[in-house]
Image (cartoon, rainbow, N blue to C red):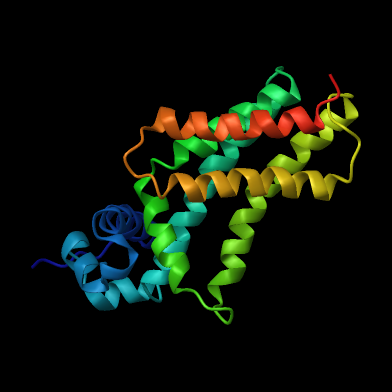
Length: 199
C-alpha cells in the first residue's frame, strides 16, 4: 500500500471525507482507524498525527454538520418571512436532517457516552448552535408582537424539546422519506405555535 505525505490541511480534509463515508457505512461502533488507514491510504501514525482517535474525528464531523445546519438556520432568519413561517421552515430543516446517515451514527455514538465523557461538552456546544438560532427567532417574534411575551428561555426550551423529541421519534421510523420526516416536525411545531401565537 502506498502511503502519502500531504500538507496538514489537505490530509485532514481527506481523513474527514473518508471518515464520514466510513461512519455512514459501518456506524460509529464498527468503524475503526484501521479501516480509515485503508480508505485514506495513510499510515496509522499519520492518522494519529492529525487526530487523536476516531471519537475526535467523529466530533469534528458532527461540528461541521451542525455548522452547515446553523448557516441554513441563520439564512432563514435573514429572510423577510414571518417568525412563524421561519420556525416552520426550521422544523422542516430538522426533519430533513433525519435522513442524514451521519445522524444515525450520532445516535449510536450518544448511547456510548457516560456522564464523565469529555465529549459531552462538545455535544453541548453543538446543541447550543441550534438553541441559539431558535432563541433569536423567538425573540424576534416576541419583539414583532407575533408570539406571547413569555420568558425567552422557557419558550426556547419548549421549541428545542419539541424538535429534538420529533427527531428522536423519527429516527425510530427508518423507512420514512425526508418529506415525511419534515412533515412530522412541521406539524409538531404547528401545534406548538397555536399555543404561543398572538394572532
